[in-house]
Amino acid sequence: MNKVELLAPAGNLYKLKIALKYGADAVYIGGEAFSLRVAADNFTKEEMAEGIDYAHSLGKKVYITANIIPHNRDLAQMEEYFKEIYELGADAVLISDLGAFNICRKAAPDLEIHISTQANNTNYATVQSWHEMGAARVVLAREMTLNEVREIRDNISPKCEIEAFVHGAMCVSYSGRCLLSNYMTARDSNYGACSHPCRWQYSLVEEKRPGEYMNVFENERGTFIMNSKDLCMIEHIPELIGSGISSLKIEGRVKSEYYVATIVAAYRKAIDAYYADPVNYKFNPEWLEEVKKVSHRDYYTGFFFGIPDTGAQIYGTSSYIRNYDIVGIVLDYDEKTKLCKLTQRNRFFKGDEVEIIQPMKENTKMKITVLKDENMNDIDVANHAAMTAYIESDIPIAKDAMIRKKAE
Image (tube, rainbow, N blue to C red; front, side):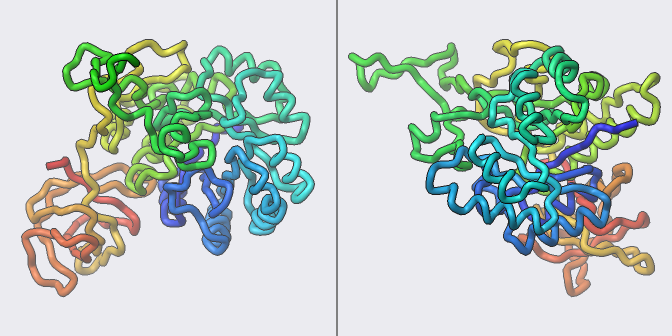
């Protein structure tokens, strides 16, 4: 059985390793050029090489994003860039522009090309055309229903893979092709610098009454008229797989390693449970509760089951829901002393009830009964940013495990 791929974001080298450890089959990353996420740390050439080697050592893949909408000034550097990432061993490059596509085909003819969602891929004629030109995979636009996905799958070459976003932030603009940010802040979203003006609060002004602001919605605090809920399809793994999608993509290259680990682990469990027994598969509500433990907006299912109604928008606030904090990342565990060494991420106390998230293991709850500083002095609170601390645990805790607790 050809299993669906779980594809995770990686904003830097550490997040790449976390995503793969927690169950991703592949990651997508951005280099220092041509990537659509300037807010991400992005990868140097040396970091790309290390990340690709690490992924390949696990039998997993790395895709490089080069999906900006390029201007003339970008073209001269593209040929060398495509040659470089091919020589580094990248498994594929994501491209949204026809000119960039042709440059890549000439510069690195053996480099696999995936067509980005930025190319507005909404029908089988477009998908098949890209495939006939040499693309191995096409990332569908977010505005697709599952019925449309199935129709595309039925009308394209079986050798052409299709990929779709299944979790993460949604852009209010069609396929992410937004001009609002560039117009309002001179930050071009199609060049990776979106300022997210769709999340701002707006009022209405009549041109002959400047300075008189009217609320767009019946709420004295104003309204966030373009503020979309986040996409979450973890409850619909059978439908996604049944539609013929080859790769399930998680959004979030600027999100934290905690976000990446938690979301990847939850989807990994759901996907594996489906393949273990497709006929008797039953959704576990704990998986949904898990993805709610990261910073997020309210969830919904996007366009997969039809055009979203007003319930897909958040009108009262642009804030995230954040019920849990990561308080530490595990560096080491000593089985003799049962002490777990960690680096602090948020303040926590002796006596706190916490939850341990480990790569490819079930989560474990425990109470912190022993807390020490880096000099092995007993302390009551770990309250210095990035300090080294030790906690005692009867259960072995793996390196890169994460410790979280309910937000205060």
